[in-house]
Amino acid sequence: MKIESWLFLGGIFFFIPVGIVYGVMTDWDEWVGFPALFMVAAMAGMVGFYLYYTAKRVGPRPEDRLDGEIHENAGVVGQFSPWSWWPLMLAAAAAVGFLGLALGFWVLFLGVGLAIIGLVGWVYEYSRGDHAH
Image (cartoon, rainbow, N blue to C red; front, side, top):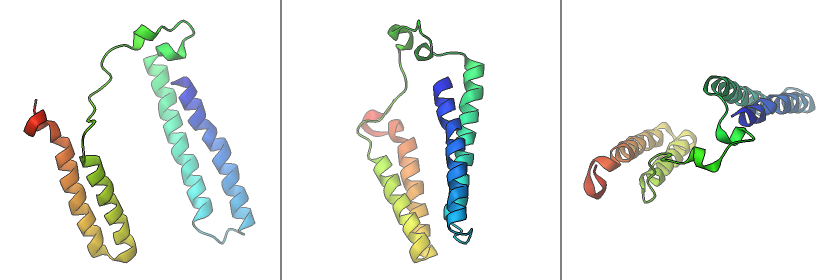
């Protein structure tokens, strides 16, 4: 994780100067661009510091070591749902929710309702039906 942490921490040294240059070029009048760039730098820093401290706590992974072997990462990584339609439902709910921010808050409430239905369906997907455990 050491390489990943340095990649994210490098984002701080990129986005902060870009945000400053953007602010100078717009005379600090445009209140979306440079704060967004500073927030991206802060988010990259948070992820980078998390990965850095996790790498120190966990130790080097096989892919971080020069003598690492392929078989050291063998085994079950996780359980994935290759035929699940619930992520599409959640994406549609997010689209409706963001559309509600532009059109009116009543549409936002429809998106939140769809998101709750999609999230419950995705969480309980393997608890009922053909794929129940």
